[in-house]
Structure formats: C-alpha cells, structure tokens
Amino acid sequence: MKKSLVLFTVLLAMAAQAEEMDRPGGIKIGQRMTIRPYVSLGFTHDSNVDSSKHSKRGESWTVQPGASLEYKAENWALTGSAYYSYHAYSSGYSHQQNESSYGEQLNFNWSNSSHGSKGWSLLLTESYRQISQDDDMSNDGGRGTGRDREQLDVGGSIEHRFTDRLHAAVNASYYYLDYDNKVGSYAPMYGWDRWTAGGEIGYAASKWTDFILAGSYQDYTSDNGKQYYVDNASKVRNSSKGYTVQAGLGSYATERISYRVLVGYAHYDYNDDSENAPVYTASLNWKMTDNWNMMALASRYYQPSETSRGSSQLTDAISWGVAHSMIRGKLNATFDLAYRRQDTKSTVRESVDYTQDIATARFGLNYSINRFIGVFGSVEFQQAWYDGGNTSRDDYNRWRGTVGMRLSY
Image 1 (cartoon, rainbow, N blue to C red):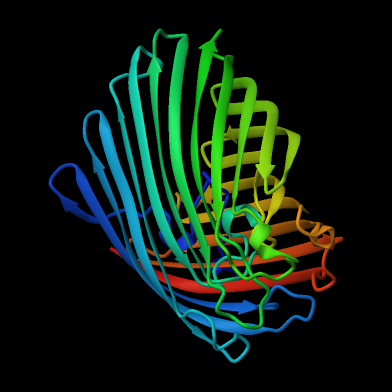
Image 2: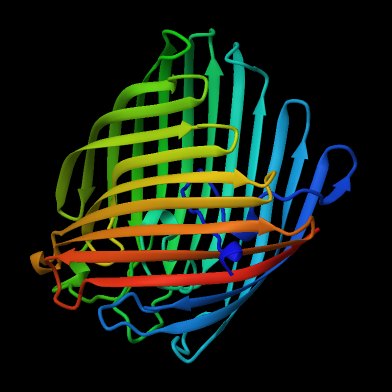
C-alpha cells in the first residue's frame, strides 16, 4: 500500500494531478504530434465532505478517462488535454452532489527568438473546468471552497526583445467563475467575471539580474447569487475595478535557480468604497539535483468576495513544494504546503467582515509499474480558521486519502 501513495500536486505552475502527469509512449501522428489517452480509477475517503465544524465522513469512487495532445513545430508548439470524471458517492455525501466533472486546456506558444536574442514571443492559453465538490480540496491555491462550480480562463501575452537587454510585453485575460447555488442547505456563493489588461518592461543588466516594471488594470462584474446578508440588495453594485503597479527583479541566481520578485501597490474600488494595500508577486524554481526540484510561489491581490456581495477580498496565497524522482523515473514523490489568507470587507453590513486562514499539507508517491500501468494515491490535511463575521462560520479541519490506478497508452 505504501508504494501506491501519490500527491495530487496543485502547486500552480509546478505539477498536475497524478493521473495527468507526463507518460511515455502515446499515439504518434506524423513526426510532430503525439496523443496520450488514459483512464484512471480512484477511491477517496474524506473526513469532512462539507468543510464544516460538524464534520461528516464520506467516500467516493472516480472513473476518469482523458487524453493529452502535443504538437511541436520548429518555432511553435501546441499542447492540450481533456478529461471527464464520473463520481459515485457513498451515503456520506449529499444527494445533491454533481456526479460529473470535466475540463480541457490548450496552450500555444510561438517565438522567432532564442536564448534572449532580439525577436517576438507569443503565448496563448485557454482552460475550462466544471468542478465537482469532491475534487481536490486545495483547488486554486488552497481556496478550500466546497461547491460545484465552473471556471473559464482565457489569456494571452506578446513580448518583444528590442535588444539582448531591453524587452517589453503586453498581456490580456478573461476569467469567468460561476457557482451552483441550487443547494438549499448551503449559504450562497458569488461568482464573477474579470477582464484584465497590463504590461511590463524589463532591462537585463546582466545574465543574473533583470529589472522589471509592471502594471495592470482589472474590471470585475459579480453575479447576483442569493441576497443573504444584504439589507437593501438593490443598492449593491455588482461591478468593481482596480489597478496594480509593481517593480522588482527577475532572471537567474545560478544556473539551477530562477526567480522573480515584484512588490508594489494596488487600489480597488467596490460598491461605495475603496481599498489600498501593498502587494507582491514572487516565484522561485530550484533544480537542486537531477532528481530533486523545488518551487515556491507567493502573491497578494484584490478580488470580489465569493461569500458576500458588495465586498472586497484581499488575498495572500503562498505555496511551497518539492518533488523527487527515483528508480529511473518510475517512482515520483511529492510534498507541498499551501497557505491562504482571505480578508473580506463589506460596505453592505459590517457583521459580514471576516478573515479566513487556510493551511494545507499534502504528500504522496506515483509508481509506474510499466509503460501502460501506474498506481497512485495521496494523503492531504487541511485546517481553516475564521476570525469575525457571521457566527455560522466555524473553524474546521479535514483530511483525505486517495488510492488508484492509471491505465495509459
């Protein structure tokens, strides 16, 4: 059993679910395209299916077919994946649970420059997910929000390197979040869509130091959800906006360590009020040895609250993880920690104001028996604390264990 444990690493840019990790083989189409189909079978025990103080245990079985695609040309590449998951629940889960989750993602990159030389680079991304409540409790950087929801994320960035030292980029994105509020026993959740536009300019003083100045503008529109906690809902505006300016350093500390650290200021307008705060964005990627890798991510930003209409939410999200490959890449171990702090303030009713802290730890192993069969599993623990706000929000803890098998081609 110990050799079948794996971590579903969700460390943003670091990793994916165990059953979606890179695998050898696949179906070759010509010289450039590879399609890798798979089916995974999994069993999960959850100590707190509703993420509440009054915990209720439950189990679920998952069948997930999916496939990844890769096409590589001389100066551009297209990658993508798609999956469908069917969930069979025990009596511990509500009958209102969604039995299906599905999603897809596409990434396109093109460049006519290499190794920092002059030229253009283009990156386009798109992803869609319909997320069942029993999915990974640390989805989206440890948010820990249990509710069926769907998310769409589309973005793009184009960069031009004027010289081997001077470079600039512009970017834009659209994000859509929609919660299922048809579950009568839960408090409402508020989704929103966001338009973002921004850019940055950098000057590489040396191979090791890149000075960066960046800025962005965000425009949000929240949905109506349900009108709980609102004295006069008709006076609550569903739009908000903000901007961020940051400056800092990027590039490489050594041949094996890359980093990016930006600090700055954010302004956020919501309903009839505004907020200001210092913000930051940081990332570190360290290839310690050929078999060990480490990544750390941190950021602070404003967004609309997902639990209270007409509110602002200042979020601090920090993640750290390490991965180790053994037995010629057949056995992979992962461990990561995530911390998230959400400070919510409302212009509608002060009793809604609260702070939530969420900490998560995960560990696991992924073992490839052969090219076609692999086993995986995960153990993860989450603790959440609330301070202030509505009395229905209580501290809780939650742990989950998952084991399964993946069949791939």
